[in-house]
Length: 194
Ligand SMILES: [Zn+2]
Image (cartoon, rainbow, N blue to C red; front, side):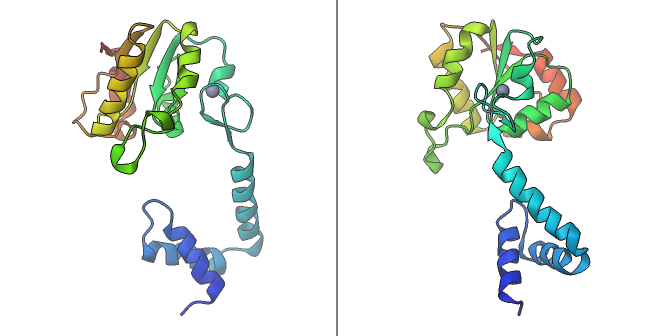
């Protein structure tokens, strides 16, 4: 029904999270037919530029366009490290503007059903950083995989550093990115021992 190149673009959109066939069609058609040509070309250039320039911070594995991220560059933070699963968790926590420590992005959580083990997480680099901190807050989600990962980290490091967890006040299984910033700020403030 569509020209081949448009068909391919629709398929590309469908690979994005939360985009079904209908939405993919609408987005692709909108880009190609309803937008000025310059806008479409600059969109494609921006996408390529973002993809090629974004790296991960050599210290905490947060996304950045430099060798280290804006958090690691900030030397005025408290000597606390918050361990999260993904870079986007850092964004959520930074937006709430109450936590003033550092982060460490694991890159994933242990999930045997998807073949992800402790070896796939950024744990060795976390280990190397621990001497700079007085406390480690484990902020993986309260899902089965998040809990498993938290317990694994606890068993590895509980002799090395004081370990706390977020006090969620959220139903088990809730992803913390869906928590409002007040709930999240409370969860950090009222964090508890492991
Ligand atoms: Zn960093």
